[in-house]
Amino acid sequence: MFVKVPKILQNFFPKIVWRHKTHEKKIWLTFDDGPDEKTTNLILEILKKLNIKATFFLIGQEIKKFPDLTKKIIDDGHTLGNHSFSHADGLRTKKEKYVYDVELNQKLINEKLVESGISKKQKLFRPPYGRILPNQFNELSKQYKIIMWDVFSWDFKENLSQKRLQKNVLKNVKPGSIIVFHNNKKSYNNLFCCLEKILISLKKMDYSFSTTW
Ligand SMILES: [Zn+2]
Image 1: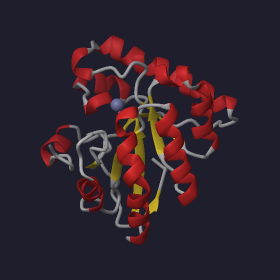
Image 2: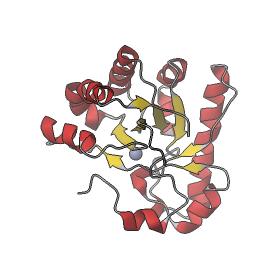
Image 3: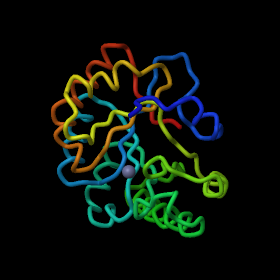
């Protein structure tokens, strides 16, 4: 289990964004999966309370189930990213199908943005499970910024202690870090206990939150 991505992996895909190069105390907060009824509302409530903006990498089939929650994320001023339509696993999906799955979701995301009056559409893609093959990457990177992370919270692990979860983030964060939490059912309890605490600690450490990719 690793919290930070090994350097060797980062070197294998140098064009992927693992972390932003900056010395400023800016970090990028990201949430994968969803929307999910319970968890998305919890996250949005906390972010609103602390006046923090984040990037949500949404799954198309969940956007279809929860159009109103998707709209709420946009209307609260957060940024949308693409996490594929069906949460496709890059290692088990042929290139054409994989690319199609991502584009299908992007169409949906763009529609939602237009509905909310947003004209500026960044194309951001985070591969489900962090898995993408070179041929898929080469195709998608023509259009999308492929975003990974350097700090993984493991918030979806049910038996993770509160202390461990907080440590996973607070001990590994540095200027330019991209932090991953999860916007799904599995992470609800951990986010309920700790997300607000962690974000307050990050603010106390003088970090500000960016959604400019
Ligand atoms: Zn995912």
